Image (cartoon, rainbow, N blue to C red; front, side, top):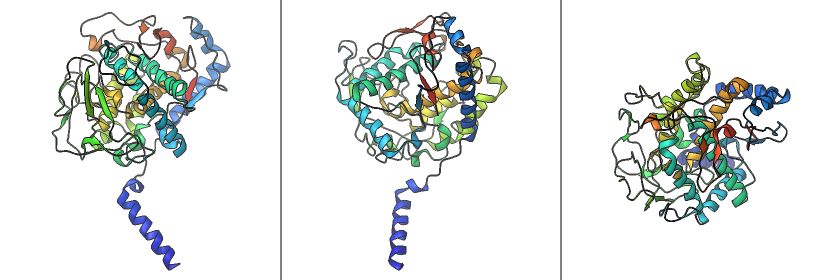
Amino acid sequence: MHLLRLALSATTVLSLADGRSCYVPEPTDGTDLLAAQSLTKLRDAIADGSLQKKLAEHDVTQTCTMENAAVRREYSTLTSKEKLAYTSAIKCLMAKPPRTPPDLAPGARSRYDDFVATHINATDTIHFTGNFLAWHRYYIQAFERALRDECGYDGYLPYWNWGKSAQDPARSPYLDGSATSQGGNGAYAPHACTPALISGMGCVPAGDGGGCVETGPYAGMVANLSATGPTFPGIRTGLPPLGYQPRCVRRDISAWVSRQWSTDAQSVDLLTNPAYQTGIRAFQDRLQGGNVSDIFTSTFFGLHSAGHFTWGGDPGGDVANSPTDIMFWLHHGQVDRTWWIWQNQKPLERVFQIAGTRTLLNLPASSEASIEDLLDLHYTAPASAIKNHLSSVGGPYCYIYA
Protein backbone atom coordinates (compact mmCIF):
# COMPACT_ATOMS: atom_id res chain seq x y z
CA MET A 1 0.00 0.00 0.00
CA HIS A 2 2.85 2.36 0.89
CA LEU A 3 4.50 1.69 -2.48
CA LEU A 4 1.19 2.24 -4.27
CA ARG A 5 0.77 5.62 -2.56
CA LEU A 6 4.31 6.58 -3.59
CA ALA A 7 3.60 5.57 -7.17
CA LEU A 8 0.38 7.56 -7.23
CA SER A 9 2.15 10.56 -5.72
CA ALA A 10 4.86 10.39 -8.38
CA THR A 11 2.21 10.20 -11.09
CA THR A 12 0.45 13.22 -9.65
CA VAL A 13 3.69 15.22 -9.58
CA LEU A 14 4.42 14.32 -13.18
CA SER A 15 0.90 15.22 -14.24
CA LEU A 16 1.08 18.58 -12.53
CA ALA A 17 4.47 19.25 -14.08
CA ASP A 18 3.07 18.29 -17.47
CA GLY A 19 0.35 20.90 -17.00
CA ARG A 20 -2.42 19.20 -18.95
CA SER A 21 -4.04 17.68 -15.86
CA CYS A 22 -4.50 21.22 -14.49
CA TYR A 23 -6.88 22.07 -17.31
CA VAL A 24 -10.55 22.24 -16.37
CA PRO A 25 -12.94 22.94 -19.26
CA GLU A 26 -15.46 25.68 -18.72
CA PRO A 27 -19.14 24.68 -18.98
CA THR A 28 -20.84 25.53 -22.26
CA ASP A 29 -24.38 24.78 -21.12
CA GLY A 30 -25.71 27.96 -22.71
CA THR A 31 -24.69 27.28 -26.29
CA ASP A 32 -25.23 23.54 -25.95
CA LEU A 33 -28.84 24.12 -24.89
CA LEU A 34 -29.39 26.52 -27.78
CA ALA A 35 -27.90 23.96 -30.19
CA ALA A 36 -30.25 21.27 -28.86
CA GLN A 37 -33.23 23.59 -29.28
CA SER A 38 -32.20 24.44 -32.83
CA LEU A 39 -31.76 20.77 -33.66
CA THR A 40 -35.30 20.08 -32.48
CA LYS A 41 -36.68 22.89 -34.66
CA LEU A 42 -34.68 21.64 -37.64
CA ARG A 43 -35.95 18.11 -37.06
CA ASP A 44 -39.55 19.37 -37.01
CA ALA A 45 -39.05 21.39 -40.22
CA ILE A 46 -37.68 18.31 -41.96
CA ALA A 47 -40.38 16.00 -40.61
CA ASP A 48 -43.34 18.10 -41.75
CA GLY A 49 -41.79 18.88 -45.15
CA SER A 50 -41.86 22.65 -44.61
CA LEU A 51 -38.10 23.08 -45.02
CA GLN A 52 -38.03 21.02 -48.20
CA LYS A 53 -40.81 23.22 -49.58
CA LYS A 54 -38.99 26.38 -48.59
CA LEU A 55 -35.73 25.25 -50.20
CA ALA A 56 -37.57 24.29 -53.39
CA GLU A 57 -38.71 27.90 -53.80
CA HIS A 58 -35.16 28.60 -54.95
CA ASP A 59 -34.59 25.25 -56.69
CA VAL A 60 -32.53 23.78 -53.83
CA THR A 61 -33.20 20.11 -53.24
CA GLN A 62 -33.40 18.40 -49.87
CA THR A 63 -33.01 14.64 -49.63
CA CYS A 64 -31.19 14.67 -46.28
CA THR A 65 -33.01 13.27 -43.26
CA MET A 66 -32.20 13.16 -39.58
CA GLU A 67 -31.51 9.45 -40.02
CA ASN A 68 -28.80 9.81 -42.67
CA ALA A 69 -27.27 13.13 -41.59
CA ALA A 70 -23.59 13.15 -40.70
CA VAL A 71 -22.82 14.36 -37.19
CA ARG A 72 -20.05 16.88 -36.56
CA ARG A 73 -18.80 16.65 -32.97
CA GLU A 74 -16.81 18.79 -30.56
CA TYR A 75 -13.12 17.96 -30.78
CA SER A 76 -12.57 17.36 -27.07
CA THR A 77 -15.30 14.69 -27.08
CA LEU A 78 -13.52 12.57 -29.70
CA THR A 79 -11.58 9.51 -28.57
CA SER A 80 -7.80 9.56 -28.88
CA LYS A 81 -8.12 7.19 -31.81
CA GLU A 82 -10.55 9.53 -33.56
CA LYS A 83 -8.32 12.56 -32.96
CA LEU A 84 -5.30 10.72 -34.35
CA ALA A 85 -7.31 9.67 -37.42
CA TYR A 86 -8.20 13.30 -38.07
CA THR A 87 -4.59 14.39 -37.64
CA SER A 88 -3.36 11.59 -39.88
CA ALA A 89 -5.74 12.60 -42.68
CA ILE A 90 -4.51 16.21 -42.54
CA LYS A 91 -0.91 15.00 -42.76
CA CYS A 92 -1.97 12.93 -45.76
CA LEU A 93 -3.13 16.10 -47.56
CA MET A 94 0.18 17.72 -46.67
CA ALA A 95 2.01 14.84 -48.34
CA LYS A 96 0.04 14.94 -51.60
CA PRO A 97 1.09 17.16 -54.52
CA PRO A 98 -0.84 20.38 -55.22
CA ARG A 99 -3.44 20.65 -57.96
CA THR A 100 -3.22 24.42 -58.31
CA PRO A 101 -1.07 25.21 -61.39
CA PRO A 102 2.34 26.58 -60.40
CA ASP A 103 1.84 29.73 -62.44
CA LEU A 104 -1.19 30.59 -60.25
CA ALA A 105 0.34 29.66 -56.88
CA PRO A 106 4.09 29.11 -57.25
CA GLY A 107 4.45 28.72 -53.48
CA ALA A 108 2.02 25.80 -53.18
CA ARG A 109 3.85 22.60 -52.33
CA SER A 110 1.01 20.26 -51.30
CA ARG A 111 -2.66 19.45 -51.64
CA TYR A 112 -3.11 21.17 -48.28
CA ASP A 113 -1.60 24.32 -49.80
CA ASP A 114 -4.35 24.26 -52.44
CA PHE A 115 -6.77 25.16 -49.68
CA VAL A 116 -4.52 27.93 -48.38
CA ALA A 117 -4.05 29.35 -51.89
CA THR A 118 -7.83 29.30 -52.43
CA HIS A 119 -8.38 31.33 -49.27
CA ILE A 120 -5.64 33.81 -50.16
CA ASN A 121 -7.07 34.34 -53.63
CA ALA A 122 -10.58 34.94 -52.30
CA THR A 123 -9.81 36.96 -49.15
CA ASP A 124 -10.98 40.36 -50.39
CA THR A 125 -14.36 38.95 -51.45
CA ILE A 126 -15.16 36.56 -48.56
CA HIS A 127 -14.68 38.60 -45.37
CA PHE A 128 -17.11 41.29 -44.18
CA THR A 129 -19.15 40.42 -47.26
CA GLY A 130 -22.56 38.96 -48.00
CA ASN A 131 -21.05 35.55 -48.71
CA PHE A 132 -18.76 35.28 -45.65
CA LEU A 133 -20.72 32.56 -43.88
CA ALA A 134 -21.78 30.62 -46.96
CA TRP A 135 -18.32 30.69 -48.56
CA HIS A 136 -16.65 29.37 -45.43
CA ARG A 137 -19.34 26.70 -45.01
CA TYR A 138 -18.57 25.47 -48.51
CA TYR A 139 -14.83 25.78 -47.89
CA ILE A 140 -14.73 23.66 -44.73
CA GLN A 141 -17.02 21.12 -46.34
CA ALA A 142 -14.62 20.87 -49.30
CA PHE A 143 -11.81 20.29 -46.80
CA GLU A 144 -13.83 17.63 -45.00
CA ARG A 145 -14.56 15.97 -48.35
CA ALA A 146 -10.87 15.96 -49.29
CA LEU A 147 -9.97 14.33 -45.97
CA ARG A 148 -12.56 11.62 -46.59
CA ASP A 149 -12.25 11.06 -50.33
CA GLU A 150 -8.51 11.59 -50.79
CA CYS A 151 -7.11 10.42 -47.47
CA GLY A 152 -9.50 7.74 -46.21
CA TYR A 153 -10.77 9.66 -43.17
CA ASP A 154 -14.03 8.09 -42.00
CA GLY A 155 -15.07 10.85 -39.60
CA TYR A 156 -16.43 14.33 -40.12
CA LEU A 157 -14.99 17.76 -39.44
CA PRO A 158 -14.87 18.41 -35.69
CA TYR A 159 -15.39 21.81 -34.13
CA TRP A 160 -13.90 23.78 -31.23
CA ASN A 161 -16.49 25.08 -28.78
CA TRP A 162 -14.66 28.28 -27.87
CA GLY A 163 -16.14 28.63 -24.40
CA LYS A 164 -14.68 25.36 -23.15
CA SER A 165 -11.11 26.64 -23.34
CA ALA A 166 -11.68 30.38 -22.97
CA GLN A 167 -10.04 30.60 -19.55
CA ASP A 168 -7.06 28.35 -20.25
CA PRO A 169 -6.47 27.75 -23.99
CA ALA A 170 -2.80 26.73 -23.71
CA ARG A 171 -3.65 23.75 -21.46
CA SER A 172 -6.72 22.72 -23.41
CA PRO A 173 -6.89 19.51 -25.47
CA TYR A 174 -6.90 21.64 -28.60
CA LEU A 175 -3.61 23.46 -27.98
CA ASP A 176 -1.74 21.64 -25.20
CA GLY A 177 0.94 20.24 -27.52
CA SER A 178 0.06 16.60 -26.85
CA ALA A 179 -0.02 13.96 -29.59
CA THR A 180 -3.81 14.27 -29.81
CA SER A 181 -3.90 18.07 -29.87
CA GLN A 182 -3.70 20.44 -32.81
CA GLY A 183 -0.25 21.50 -31.73
CA GLY A 184 1.03 23.57 -28.84
CA ASN A 185 2.19 27.10 -28.25
CA GLY A 186 5.20 28.49 -30.03
CA ALA A 187 8.55 28.31 -28.28
CA TYR A 188 9.19 31.45 -26.31
CA ALA A 189 10.65 34.28 -28.37
CA PRO A 190 10.63 37.91 -27.25
CA HIS A 191 8.23 39.99 -29.33
CA ALA A 192 5.99 43.04 -29.28
CA CYS A 193 2.21 43.05 -29.07
CA THR A 194 0.15 41.96 -32.07
CA PRO A 195 -2.04 44.62 -33.76
CA ALA A 196 -4.97 42.32 -34.37
CA LEU A 197 -7.85 44.60 -35.36
CA ILE A 198 -8.47 46.70 -38.47
CA SER A 199 -8.71 49.75 -36.22
CA GLY A 200 -5.21 49.09 -34.91
CA MET A 201 -6.61 49.57 -31.41
CA GLY A 202 -6.65 45.96 -30.25
CA CYS A 203 -2.97 45.15 -29.81
CA VAL A 204 -2.73 41.70 -28.20
CA PRO A 205 -0.15 41.73 -25.38
CA ALA A 206 2.88 39.51 -25.97
CA GLY A 207 2.47 36.10 -24.37
CA ASP A 208 4.61 33.09 -23.53
CA GLY A 209 5.07 31.96 -27.13
CA GLY A 210 6.05 33.79 -30.26
CA GLY A 211 8.39 31.24 -31.81
CA CYS A 212 8.03 28.09 -33.87
CA VAL A 213 5.55 25.39 -32.85
CA GLU A 214 7.74 22.51 -31.64
CA THR A 215 5.17 20.29 -29.91
CA GLY A 216 2.23 18.22 -31.05
CA PRO A 217 1.54 16.24 -34.22
CA TYR A 218 2.52 19.07 -36.58
CA ALA A 219 5.75 20.09 -34.84
CA GLY A 220 8.08 21.71 -37.34
CA MET A 221 5.32 22.46 -39.83
CA VAL A 222 6.30 24.98 -42.49
CA ALA A 223 4.13 27.69 -44.03
CA ASN A 224 4.96 27.69 -47.73
CA LEU A 225 2.91 30.49 -49.24
CA SER A 226 4.13 34.06 -48.88
CA ALA A 227 2.67 36.27 -46.18
CA THR A 228 -0.14 38.53 -47.36
CA GLY A 229 -1.21 40.65 -44.39
CA PRO A 230 0.91 39.61 -41.42
CA THR A 231 0.07 41.09 -38.03
CA PHE A 232 2.75 39.28 -36.06
CA PRO A 233 5.92 41.29 -35.36
CA GLY A 234 8.89 40.51 -37.58
CA ILE A 235 6.99 38.84 -40.44
CA ARG A 236 7.41 40.60 -43.77
CA THR A 237 4.89 40.54 -46.57
CA GLY A 238 6.09 38.14 -49.22
CA LEU A 239 6.51 39.02 -52.88
CA PRO A 240 5.16 37.94 -55.24
CA PRO A 241 1.71 37.08 -53.83
CA LEU A 242 1.25 33.32 -53.50
CA GLY A 243 5.01 32.97 -53.87
CA TYR A 244 7.29 30.58 -52.00
CA GLN A 245 8.27 31.94 -48.59
CA PRO A 246 8.99 28.93 -46.37
CA ARG A 247 8.97 29.68 -42.64
CA CYS A 248 7.99 27.83 -39.52
CA VAL A 249 4.46 28.15 -38.16
CA ARG A 250 4.59 30.40 -35.10
CA ARG A 251 2.04 30.85 -32.32
CA ASP A 252 1.52 33.01 -29.28
CA ILE A 253 -1.51 31.60 -27.45
CA SER A 254 -3.45 34.38 -25.74
CA ALA A 255 -5.80 33.90 -22.82
CA TRP A 256 -6.04 37.71 -22.81
CA VAL A 257 -8.10 37.40 -26.00
CA SER A 258 -10.12 34.30 -25.19
CA ARG A 259 -11.11 35.31 -21.67
CA GLN A 260 -12.69 38.49 -22.98
CA TRP A 261 -14.27 37.47 -26.27
CA SER A 262 -14.48 33.65 -26.56
CA THR A 263 -16.54 32.77 -23.51
CA ASP A 264 -19.79 30.87 -23.63
CA ALA A 265 -21.50 34.01 -22.38
CA GLN A 266 -20.31 35.88 -25.47
CA SER A 267 -21.74 33.17 -27.73
CA VAL A 268 -25.04 33.09 -25.84
CA ASP A 269 -25.30 36.88 -26.10
CA LEU A 270 -24.76 36.72 -29.86
CA LEU A 271 -27.47 34.06 -30.18
CA THR A 272 -30.07 35.54 -27.83
CA ASN A 273 -29.57 39.29 -27.51
CA PRO A 274 -32.50 40.92 -29.35
CA ALA A 275 -30.07 43.35 -31.02
CA TYR A 276 -28.58 40.49 -33.07
CA GLN A 277 -31.80 38.64 -33.84
CA THR A 278 -33.23 41.27 -36.20
CA GLY A 279 -31.62 39.64 -39.22
CA ILE A 280 -28.46 38.11 -40.60
CA ARG A 281 -26.71 41.48 -41.01
CA ALA A 282 -26.80 42.28 -37.28
CA PHE A 283 -25.82 38.71 -36.38
CA GLN A 284 -22.85 38.41 -38.72
CA ASP A 285 -21.57 41.91 -37.99
CA ARG A 286 -21.43 41.11 -34.28
CA LEU A 287 -19.84 37.72 -35.00
CA GLN A 288 -17.08 39.38 -37.04
CA GLY A 289 -16.51 42.27 -34.64
CA GLY A 290 -18.56 45.17 -35.99
CA ASN A 291 -20.18 46.74 -39.02
CA VAL A 292 -18.66 48.86 -41.76
CA SER A 293 -19.44 52.12 -39.97
CA ASP A 294 -17.62 51.32 -36.72
CA ILE A 295 -15.02 48.67 -37.59
CA PHE A 296 -12.28 51.29 -38.07
CA THR A 297 -12.65 52.52 -34.50
CA SER A 298 -13.61 49.27 -32.80
CA THR A 299 -11.77 47.59 -29.93
CA PHE A 300 -14.23 44.66 -29.95
CA PHE A 301 -12.82 41.44 -31.38
CA GLY A 302 -15.97 39.43 -31.88
CA LEU A 303 -16.04 35.65 -31.74
CA HIS A 304 -14.53 35.19 -35.20
CA SER A 305 -11.43 37.35 -34.73
CA ALA A 306 -11.04 36.21 -31.13
CA GLY A 307 -10.77 32.61 -32.24
CA HIS A 308 -8.00 33.42 -34.70
CA PHE A 309 -6.04 35.51 -32.22
CA THR A 310 -6.38 33.01 -29.41
CA TRP A 311 -3.44 31.26 -31.09
CA GLY A 312 -2.38 34.16 -33.36
CA GLY A 313 1.21 34.22 -34.53
CA ASP A 314 2.10 33.62 -38.16
CA PRO A 315 0.32 32.71 -40.34
CA GLY A 316 -2.59 32.34 -37.87
CA GLY A 317 -2.86 36.12 -37.55
CA ASP A 318 -2.65 36.73 -41.29
CA VAL A 319 -6.26 36.84 -42.49
CA ALA A 320 -5.51 35.53 -45.96
CA ASN A 321 -3.01 32.83 -44.95
CA SER A 322 -4.75 31.77 -41.73
CA PRO A 323 -5.78 28.28 -42.97
CA THR A 324 -2.11 27.31 -42.89
CA ASP A 325 -2.53 27.00 -39.11
CA ILE A 326 -4.35 23.73 -38.47
CA MET A 327 -6.60 25.28 -35.80
CA PHE A 328 -8.38 27.17 -38.58
CA TRP A 329 -10.57 24.17 -39.34
CA LEU A 330 -11.80 23.54 -35.79
CA HIS A 331 -12.37 27.28 -35.39
CA HIS A 332 -14.42 27.65 -38.55
CA GLY A 333 -16.31 24.50 -37.64
CA GLN A 334 -17.52 26.46 -34.61
CA VAL A 335 -18.19 29.58 -36.71
CA ASP A 336 -20.42 27.41 -38.89
CA ARG A 337 -22.05 25.77 -35.86
CA THR A 338 -22.84 29.19 -34.39
CA TRP A 339 -24.49 30.26 -37.66
CA TRP A 340 -26.27 26.88 -37.80
CA ILE A 341 -27.70 27.46 -34.30
CA TRP A 342 -28.82 30.96 -35.27
CA GLN A 343 -30.39 29.79 -38.54
CA ASN A 344 -32.32 26.94 -36.96
CA GLN A 345 -33.83 29.01 -34.21
CA LYS A 346 -36.17 30.00 -37.07
CA PRO A 347 -35.30 27.55 -39.87
CA LEU A 348 -37.83 28.69 -42.47
CA GLU A 349 -37.43 32.42 -41.88
CA ARG A 350 -33.64 32.47 -41.75
CA VAL A 351 -32.49 29.84 -44.25
CA PHE A 352 -32.13 32.20 -47.22
CA GLN A 353 -30.98 35.27 -45.31
CA ILE A 354 -27.75 36.88 -46.48
CA ALA A 355 -26.65 40.51 -46.22
CA GLY A 356 -23.65 42.53 -47.31
CA THR A 357 -21.88 43.59 -50.46
CA ARG A 358 -19.50 41.65 -52.66
CA THR A 359 -16.29 43.30 -51.40
CA LEU A 360 -14.51 43.37 -48.05
CA LEU A 361 -16.02 46.20 -45.99
CA ASN A 362 -17.51 47.42 -49.27
CA LEU A 363 -14.07 48.62 -50.40
CA PRO A 364 -14.23 49.35 -53.26
CA ALA A 365 -17.98 49.96 -53.25
CA SER A 366 -19.95 47.09 -54.74
CA SER A 367 -23.51 45.86 -55.06
CA GLU A 368 -25.32 43.71 -52.52
CA ALA A 369 -24.63 40.00 -52.70
CA SER A 370 -27.34 37.72 -54.08
CA ILE A 371 -28.11 34.09 -53.31
CA GLU A 372 -27.51 33.45 -57.02
CA ASP A 373 -23.88 34.63 -56.77
CA LEU A 374 -21.29 31.94 -57.36
CA LEU A 375 -18.88 30.74 -54.70
CA ASP A 376 -15.58 29.94 -56.41
CA LEU A 377 -13.29 27.55 -54.58
CA HIS A 378 -10.83 27.21 -57.44
CA TYR A 379 -8.96 23.91 -57.23
CA THR A 380 -10.70 22.64 -54.10
CA ALA A 381 -14.36 22.42 -55.22
CA PRO A 382 -16.58 23.39 -58.19
CA ALA A 383 -18.15 26.86 -58.38
CA SER A 384 -21.67 26.86 -56.97
CA ALA A 385 -24.40 29.41 -56.17
CA ILE A 386 -24.70 30.71 -52.60
CA LYS A 387 -28.27 29.41 -52.38
CA ASN A 388 -26.92 25.84 -52.38
CA HIS A 389 -24.90 26.50 -49.22
CA LEU A 390 -27.44 28.04 -46.87
CA SER A 391 -28.79 24.88 -45.26
CA SER A 392 -26.83 22.06 -43.65
CA VAL A 393 -29.46 19.61 -44.93
CA GLY A 394 -30.08 21.12 -48.38
CA GLY A 395 -28.25 20.99 -51.69
CA PRO A 396 -24.93 19.12 -51.31
CA TYR A 397 -25.12 19.06 -47.50
CA CYS A 398 -26.36 16.51 -45.03
CA TYR A 399 -24.94 17.18 -41.57
CA ILE A 400 -25.94 18.35 -38.12
CA TYR A 401 -24.03 19.40 -35.02
CA ALA A 402 -23.96 17.45 -31.78
